[in-house]
Amino acid sequence: MNKRSARCVIISYDEDEQAIQTCTVDRALVTQLMQAALTIPWPLEDENFKLDDEFARRLGGVVFGLLSVHQPELKQYVSVTPHPDAVESPEPPAD
Image: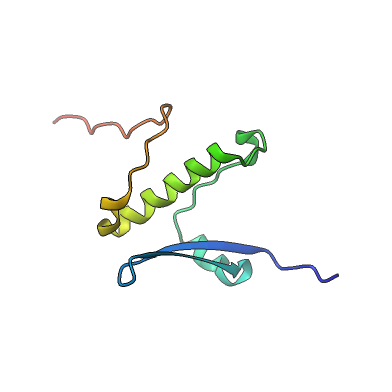
C-alpha cells in the first residue's frame, strides 16, 4: 500500500465569490511559507488527545477570527461566542 504524504489544510475566504474555500496541500510545498507565517501551536496533550466537537468549535473560532482580521469584510458574518476561559488582550497602559 502506498503511504500518502503529509498534508496541510488551507482555509481561505474568497471575497468575489463570498465563499470559504478549503483545500489540502502537500506539506513539503508549504513548509517554507509556514516558517514565515504566524504559527499557533496547539499541542494535542493540552487537549488530552481529544479532537472532539468542542475542540472543533474553538479551532473554527480561531480560523474565523484570523481570517476576519485580515479580511474585515468577513467580520460582519462571524458570530462565534468566545470561550468563557478566553482572556482578552490587556488594555495598553495609560500615559
